[in-house]
Image 1 (cartoon, each protein chain N blue to C red):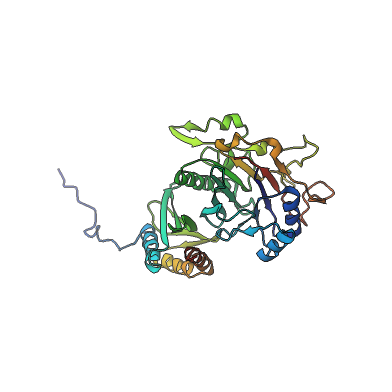
Image 2: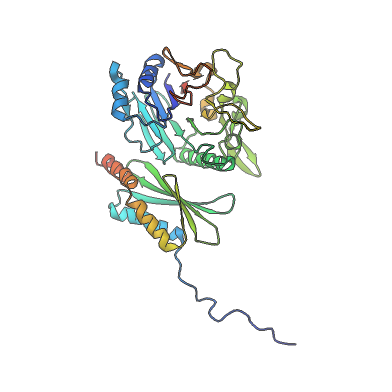
Amino acid sequence: MPNFFFWNTAGKPVEKLISAAAESHDVDLFLLAECSIDTRVLIRSLNSRGSGYRRLRSSLCRRITILTRYSSDYIRPFDEGERYSISRVKMPAREEILLVSAHLPSKLEFSDASQAQECARLARLIIAAEESVGHQRTLFMGDINVNPFEAGVVGAGALHAVMTKNTAARNSRTIQGEDYRFFYNPMWSHFGDGRSDAPPGTYYYEKAEHVMYFWNIFDQVLLRPALAGSFRHEDLAVLTHIGSESLLSPNGRPNKEVSDHLPLLLRLNF
Amino acid sequence: MTDIPNLWPEGVRETTPMITPNAIFKRQASALADRTDGVLQGTVTRRVHEDGDFVYSFKITSTTLDYSYELFLAWHKPILLYPVTCSFQSRVTRCGNQEELLEWLRGVFSSDETKRVIDSLLAQINE
């Protein structure tokens, strides 16, 4: 099964960790946000053990770096912009999927309402791509800088991503005569400290104000119902270690010297 | 009965010629095809935002590669064509009239970022 790895690297020189992740998690495709590592340095590090990774040169999105060890014939960018990338992924003996990634404006840049509008815009771009290619086998992996419970993610006119497969399996719902297709958002299961082997979120933020979540899940995997059926919870992880190196500080929060975001690892059969 | 006068001025139909942002974007979209012998095209889509604004997305498209790249966004109030607010590479610029919009577009089209996108697409097409 293909392994997908998403990480907002926060502009840090983490090429050795990315290389270690490739080896320890058998990663087939990397999606990196805020990656400022020189491509040659990154590729050299990744291929130091002869793995054959390459940057997807046909992708022009500046904010998302795509690296893969698959043939570039299998992954064709389809619609991109400064902050988003939508690619058609067609591998032998597998049905085509749409692979979407994005790095949307942060809460420092945009208000909650504006962030919701950005999510709605991304949702429209995804729907337009789905209409063009004629299927809805869509996987999203990216940093949308809003939590799964916020309007930009749950809103019908936005990403419309819900917390259970059962709800998403309805494919769409009708509001005021208009149909809105669902995403399934498995990230809901990754909140809090209920599991000893997993962090409470992907991003930590604290400020002396009244409403504060402390742990957030801005980095998310979303699946259309057509792909959600083959998704298994044990195949999605928020990583706290890569190899033997911890990505956390002694206080249990993401180590900002490495990145203030934790990476996502997804194994998906499609 | 007293006649009610027509209060509208004689020259009410004599308006200052104004080109809409939509017309300017569409002209520039087709101009890209002219400049590249049809290898690259510009596409403009317009939608109505929830608050009523008209929002435009300008994409550079290659039918050969089956690929589109969104170069910039612009929006304005539905009745007032100007000012039009434009966003390119996360920089937001307010163009108060068509001259300012044309000047902004000239800067976008001759920018390093646009050159990067076009050069890369042409290189892939010529592979």
